[in-house]
Amino acid sequence: MTTPLPLDRHATGTPGGMAAKLRLAYMVSHPIQYQAPLLRRIALEPDIDLTVLFGSDLSVRGYKDQGFGVEVAWDTPLLEGYRAEFLRSWRDTGSISATSPISRGICRRLSHKDGTPAFDALWVHGYSSVNSLLAILAANALGIPVLLRAESWLADRVRHRWKLALKRAFFQMLRPGIAAVLPIGTANQAYWTHYFGDSVPQFPMPYAVDNQYFASCAHASLERQAELRSQLNLPSGKPVILFASKLQQRKHADHLLQAYHRFLAGRPSHPVEEQPCLVIAGDGAERARLEELARQLRLEDVRFAGFRNQSELPGFFALASVFVLPSRHEPWGLIVNEAMAAGCPAIVSTDVGCHHDLIRDGVDGWVFPVGDIAALSDALHRVFASPQSAKLIGLNAQKRIQSWSYEEDVQGLRRALACVTGWFRD
Image (tube, rainbow, N blue to C red; front, side, top):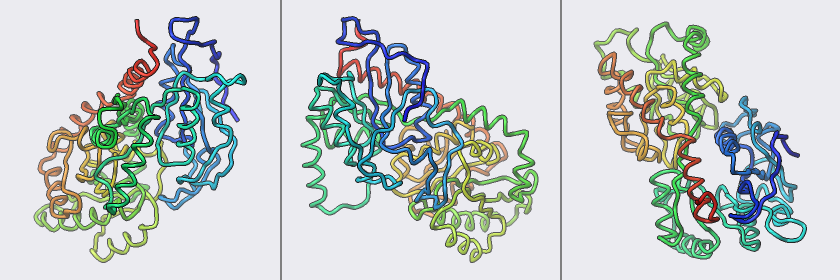
């Protein structure tokens, strides 16, 4: 299965020969809503011939997301604007894991019939799945340099000493097969340095979203704010605190509910109409427990909005005075990028990896120690210290995120390709 694109596959060869384009293959488990705009952007590069190889089509045929706990059919185009192929499958359970999907014929797809490489470089997303490792091994056998990108960071769950020893041994074996890594941010860069040292070059390729899309959609949604407020039963003009993510334990919406309760108790002199509502957008296994907690805390101004698709989120960001992500073990948190692009400032925990790169506390947003309910409550007080506080921080956030974009991604990818293939050099 392929998606047609009005681009010809140019004859290619070694740099300095008759080649017009560098042939780049990208291996990833399935179409991902966050990645599709980036792939479209890369496909616009006049000297890169991009082919995306998917192991599964689960996200385009509709599936039950284990985190959201509901059937998901993304309402943004996942396959438009770039060349893509779905590899034949040995195993596809309809979910993503270390052993699903597993594709057949990866080596065959990366080579011509005569056994010569069909691509000048292979970019792989992740290293902990069978499919990723098969792709890396196949590329190594064919002499195709491999670029590796992943979300991993060192601030992970507690591991036994023997597991850490095994992990280090695994990376020692993997290291010779990786030509370069593409760090998504500061925490990820530290991870690669820890396991690969200086032996594998790094070319930053930041975790970004389509900033212009979220900014323009948020602006366009302003005309429909009354409709959204009516849908959520929110009084006109009442401030909004927003949480939007999967309702999983590690996302800790319960910490936000507790901090919100504490925050309201610390503002007894404020009129009811000035007290912000809390909107929780998302679904998942924790929803019933969170709803019960809100009842126990007697929080009348909490709204559970359920799962919201990609195109709906900008309207929620435009509605909110602040977005909060209190997660534990969140290697990045792309929804923070989305909120900032829409001009909505964010409060995040120290376990949300993007805070190292995107948020200066009190300037572009607010950062609190993970699990510290009192500190999160204090951050909410800082947001609503004056009518202009959140607006000013939101403007700073939107300005800051502009330099964390797909353009930086393309530059990082090109530098990596130049290093491992010799292309793009005078």
